[in-house]
Image 1: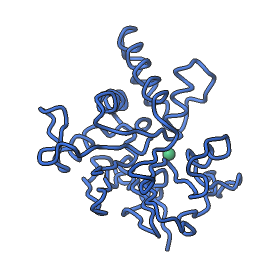
Image 2 (image 1 turned 90 degrees about the horizontal axis):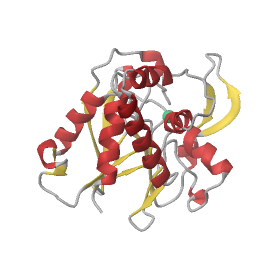
Image 3 (image 1 turned 60 degrees about the vertical axis):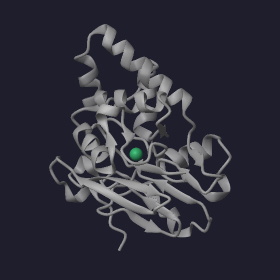
Length: 246
Ligand SMILES: [Mn+2]
């Protein structure tokens, strides 16, 4: 299987189009790959929030998945937007406010269409994708090898939020353990969630959230080539949002 897996987009629609072009997908041909028509796309989740164009990202990703050209897994921001669309009480914070502001600009008809598209996208996608005979797993914040194949509340929390301790850093962000450090499985685990300056390869895992929304880059992991490709972000750079592992 040939696939390009794209990191956290967070409404950075322009960068997404630039990355798709750089990867060789042609917009005028419904984003089929120029040279390899069987090449697929995948998204690690967190399509929306904080960035300028969350609605456009939802539309494009939904269309690609609907057309069978892309795989998708939800991120924690997707999970919250899903609950918002369901009419559940969620706090309009941590970037959801920008998505909600975009939604409020839509006509009732457009709003209902986007809502339906997004709910369907999440409903039809698994919590994490197990691909290529289990040699490739896509999970928003990662997954432990022994949990592959299991879906329960504990696994869902891990996949959406990472290996959190329940405690917070001095800046209020949750403390996340470095599960990738202990990853010993033979499968590739491709994830995002924690912005890093460069794709972070450790054992057979790669974090491809290079913080596009914080002025880093939008990155893709190409499989089976095991290479990455990126476009620079068009957003202002906010250094303190990036995690350093040194
Ligand atoms: Mn996330």
